[in-house]
Amino acid sequence: MATGTIEKQYVEPKITIVGAGPGDPDLISIKGVKALKTADVILYDALVDETLLSYAPQQSIKVFVGNPSGDENFSQDVVNQLMVDYALNFGHVVRLKGGDLFVFGRGYEEIAYAESYSIQATIVPGISSAISVPGLQGIPVTQRGISESLWILSGTDSNGRLSEELTTAAQSRATVIVLLGYEKLSQIVEIYQQAGKGKLPAAVIQNGSMANEKIAIGLVNTIAETAEEKQIDGTQPVLLIFGQAVALHQDFQSIRRFFDQLECVDCY
Image (cartoon, rainbow, N blue to C red; front, side, top):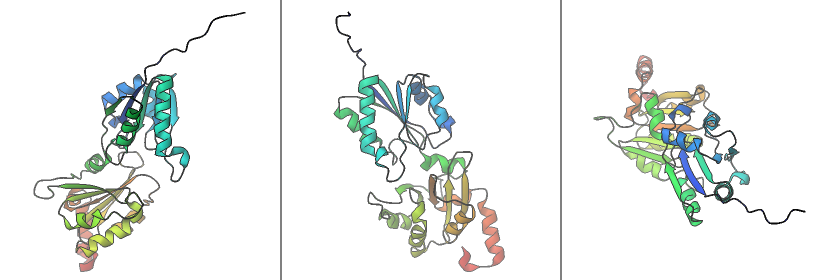
């Protein structure tokens, strides 16, 4: 009969929160890849390309913590607790998130929760879709003489209502990037029209940087209809862009010539 006790091997809890970028798996940072290669556990969300998991050790635990709307199994509180529990029991947890941690990524909440358990969280920034997705389309979010400031807004507030800051943003000359706002596009268009900016260039991009990317280019007055024509449905990540910088997109001049040929003053 065996005697004695089996001691549980101590693991040093460690958490690394990694921004995976806008969607294209090649846009993750080298530092992010290095973190994945040493992970014992990976918690990854719905905006992460799963090919990135191949960087992790084969024996590592991969846990999907996507965020379907209304599903309590993937609430932020649940994800926070999973992150800590896995770190305490297995060691190095990589929390892999789409985009950048601090641009509507709730990264600070996860860092604060980890530190409440005296687990230090290392931060690996990611490329934000707010800047990179327009850039990949040849739309500079700032351009000397055209747009010298940038607003990045959520389309809705924490209660799901249209963000009040959109009214102020529409009055500015800045390039305005709206995330999490496609369902409110018609209301956002009305705000710009009320500001006398129905002819302002606008764009809608779905699945930016990915193979199934869709883009609609037009003007405030027509952008909702153009997005529908391009079969942008909002079931995947969508980014809205308003501002003169959109006119630098290669397709914009042909759009403007089309309206000029119609001699339709109210079209744009």
